[in-house]
Length: 460
Ligand code: GDP
Image 1: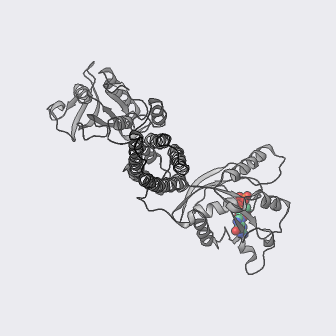
Image 2: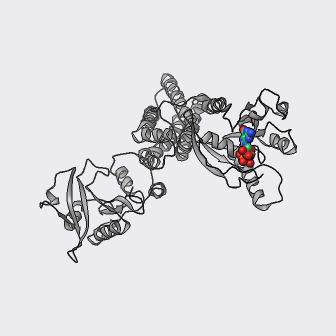
Image 3: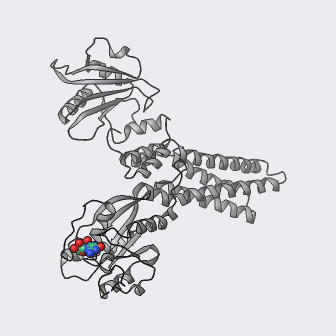
């Protein structure tokens, strides 16, 4: 770490925009800015009160030339993003102006920030814990509104508080076990052991709940991975478009034309679906089409939910039968399309072949679509979306560490049952505490921080 350095970066996305922000944090942030900034109304940036905005120009000291017309935000430690002094230069959004300003800051002694370094400082300086720091990246990259809500709740500390509470309780158990070790000569108090067992059971329950929330967490932040499969021309693109309610995939009369996997997120009664429209599942001589078919097999494997589509206006064939045998029934909703062509009559397709009751729809007339949506929402999450404030695990890293902590707690409980000594039990409880501390950042090594913050963009 280079805590004494002042770091700078362009914080707005690359490319031309109306406004660009060049951000600087560290002990010399205001001083460096002061050297380059000529305020329109005179005065001195070095004397400016915290959280004020100043209009003026950035001037190249080498030439005396004005580089850009800017607004400078002055924020003094400790009530800032990083808990250090921060200067934010709001300039025109062209890449040249932003880069020129950044290079002037570097000339004056700032160093280029690495990815996530602003947020890393917020963590290192104790403003936020590691879970909150990680949620910053998640807020920025949220792909669904539900995912954004979960990330915001995490940023505000909902998951951190729950983990800290479990950790505190385990520290209490550890303290009583260690007291037992210190006074090993005296009789072991069975009441204490019962009490420790009760508390460990309780914490194991809380850990299990958090681990269980991970599926919901992934679904909310990334969407339910949904594959629409069926042989060519059954209406996969049409159904996708009907669900998206706009023309996204290209619909054609030619069999086998939806070759590319198209990904879109749609909101079905609060459940975000990440749709993967795939090429038809059938044996094909055509190499490009075969690649598409390989992809749809893969999509079925990776999907949380499969929408398996048939053309109800035609008799089933070998392709349909092969597909029925390929899809995993427990994750599949069977959809029979083109109901407008057999309205009031029995479909030509033999519904008896399907392992579950299908939904009859028409992608063309939208008949049956709301029933299909209801079924999708019901199938995923049992239709329940967790309350926004309840802690939800969204990171694989957190889930893995929670599982490690739970395993250690369970080993302690087992040890209690068979009457293992306090010392061994204390060791297990300590392991659980360390795992939880790694989640929130009480126990971390630099390597881990490097890995986490590398995933951020520069300037965050
Ligand atoms: P895909 O190859 O499975 O993606 O099928 P498409 O969505 O490209 O549809 C193939 C053909 O079936 C197109 O001509 C669509 O207009 C037609 N089609 C799709 N859904 C329906 C429907 O519900 N009713 C009728 N009558 N035609 C449909």
